[in-house]
Length: 451
Image 1 (cartoon, rainbow, N blue to C red):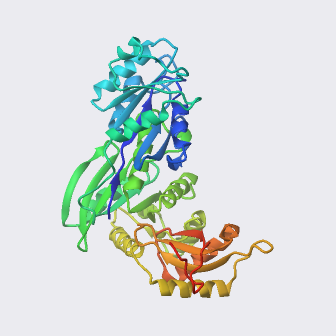
Image 2: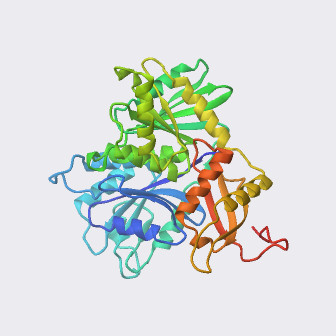
Image 3: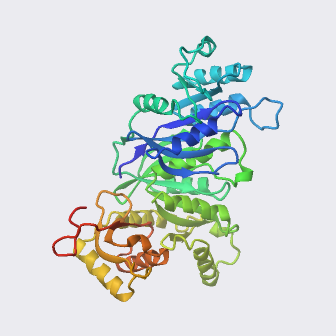
C-alpha cells in the first residue's frame, strides 16, 4: 500500500519564549489542523498539520532550562533527540529580551546537527525596519519575526517552510504491508518482533531502524512482503522520562501513521490497563487495522480452554470501542500462534481493500432503514437516501446522502456500522461513514445530482 513519509518540525528553545503559542497559532488556522494528539507526554505535544497542501508533523517540546533545575536531561540531549527525529528545527527566542547563554547554546547545538534550522524571533509586536545585528550573530538563517498575539509573521514562516521541505512522497515498494508493534514497555514487543522476523525462511531484508526506537524487518509470507516495525514502549504520562522517552512517543505516532495494520501487544499478566486502550484508540482514530495480541501466554500456569474463554469477554469489554479488532493469544517462547498473526494481517488487508457494488450497498441501506428507521426531532427526521463507497480511500469509507443528517443520533450511526459489518464484515479494520446533505435531488429521487 502507498505510504507517505511526512517531514517532522521540532520547536526548541528555552522556557517562556512562546513555543506553545506558536504551536497553537499554526494549528488553530482553518487550513492547518488535520489531527492532534495532545497530552502524549507531560511537557510536549505533537500534531499532524497541513499548510498549502503540504502535510507535516510539528512537535512542541518542553522548555529548556538550566542544569540547576530539576530536569533529568540536558540541553545537549534534547537537541540530539530533536535532530534524530526532526527534518527541520525551529529555534525560538523572545524579542525585546537580550539573547542569553541558553539561547546561544541552543543555536550552536542546533546548527551542529546539520539539519535545516530556522531562527524564530517570537513576541515581536512591532514591524522591524531591519533584522537586529544581535540575531544575525547567532548564525542561523532564515530569521523570522513573529507575533502570535497579533497574528504576524505566521504565514511568512509557513510559506518558507513548505517551500523548503520535501513533499510527502510515495515509497517505491507501495505493495508492501507495514505492521507496527505497539504497547507499553516490557510487554514482549521486541521478543515478538524477533520471533516474527525469524519465523519465516525467506527474509528479504533486515536493517536497523531510521531512528533509535524503530527497528524494521521485512519478511515474505504467502508471496507478500510484510515490513515489521518494532517501536519503543509508550509509557503513562507521568512515567515518561525527559529526553529519549519524549521523542519515542513521537516515533510511535509516526509508526502508526506509516502502518497499515497495528499489533497492540499486551502482557497476559497485566491486562485491563488504561494506556493499552488509549493506544488502541489512537490506532482507531488513525484508521489503521488493529490486532489485539495477548503475549506471554506460556507464562499462564494452567492454560485451559476455560481460562482462555474466561479472558476473551473481559478483553473484548475493555476494547468495546473497537469490537471489530482481531484477538490472538501468543507465546514467543513456544511460537504459539505467531504465524497466525501473519494470516490475520493478510485477512485484514483483504477486508480493507474490499469494494462493494453500489447496488448491493443501497439494497443494504434500504433494508437497514426499513428494519429500524432513524429518529430525530419534530419535523426533522433524518432521511437516508443513497450510499456510495469511496474507492480511493485506504480506510473503508462510505458516503451516505440524505436530508437532516445532522440530527442523526450517534447510537444510530453505531447501529448502521453493526449492520454493515454483519453483512459485509470488514473484520479487523475501522470503517467511516460520511453523512452528506442532499440539497439537489436526482430526477429519480434516489441519487444525488453531484457527488
